[in-house]
Image 1 (tube, rainbow, N blue to C red):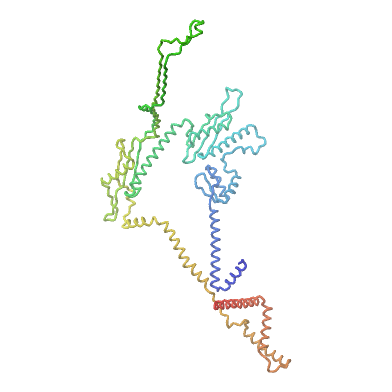
Image 2 (cartoon, rainbow, N blue to C red; image 1 turned 60 degrees about the horizontal axis):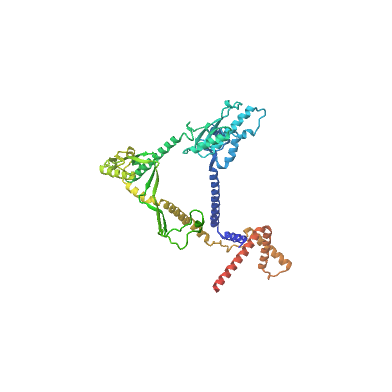
Length: 567
């Protein structure tokens, strides 16, 4: 089905509805369109209501000047925190350019953009001052780009060059920084800032760069090692004690009556001396590492060798057949070498950062409050047995060790703030029980209420509207209404014309009494219809279309009915 047919069907359906149904449809359509427009406008208004940062890290002087400029231009602004100005998000860039064109903020760092505009007649001294300001501004911008630093100011002391080496003075620099809240600079970061400044200035040594924080404290890469260690130790001790205190309060709060009725303070004495030890152990059991055996054996006399004074006898050698009376030689040799390995264990033990020497805890709990006869709350202190049980709980919580010298003290006092805030009510237990059961299902109740609202809207609005839309429109009865409605005056004039015309026709045509009045009335009505068609063309065309449409619909319904009866 194309869009044209769908539009035609919707048009015919709309024309069949009565006035009430048309009003409901039109009203609903306008309501939906209005709701969509409201959402669009609300979203755009909400988007335009969002604020973005215009400038941050502003001094009080610059902030005051910028606010004056914004008020002069009629720009809404807000100050979420000191040194930060926010404007509507859709205007932030335009306002920033406008404010910057006025030379604000004035106390911002300037760099080498000072040389973008050359002034006619500037001296060499002016150029040197600009160069010094440019280097200081660029270094300040670079240092401020580091994450822990909120603002930075760099001052350089560049002495005049001298031809005498003995009288030359090395340059120096001083840096004032302000760190972000909750962050601090480490020794490596301080050394990095010094090297950065020294590398940007010729002949500047990192030792001649001094750095101070916003409190005027000197920061050094090497001299603050002891102070940094002390800060770490204090932070470690505070964190350890706070964790113990939270444990004690959390375990006592449920049956004491709340965290505001328990006060716990824990002191932990640490030994921060780190001890490293090296231990070597030798195993008394020997282990054979290697073994070597050598064995030699000889039997019989050694072979006689010719020797003596050179001559015939010594050259000829022993005479064969002459036996020697010497005994035969026997030789045996056996050697065994065994190597043993001595096992050794070397242990390097590094002591912890801190070891606990002693723990002392002081716990103060509130008493009980019961209503008296006069209707006020009466304070009842806790008995000794209950305090002892509380003391046992505290000892188990902090890891009590008597050999270490730990101490735990539990006291019971009346909390004045709690006594004033306690109001007797007979429904306290019922309310607490109600909240105990209802609070876990509060998120579910939100969705349930939303579902009920949607269900009521469906039953009271959607269903009646759907039923009314599905009703068969009751067409107004047109029976008895003539197609052409004639007024009384027109009817009388037509009757007179009819009489005159009849007489005239009878006289001219010689008609007899057989003349048909019905035919004459038909001719007169036909003439009237022609006149109406010429005078009211649009209305006549609409009337013909309505007649044709009604006839076609009647034929279709009749055909459908016949098919159903046959089927």
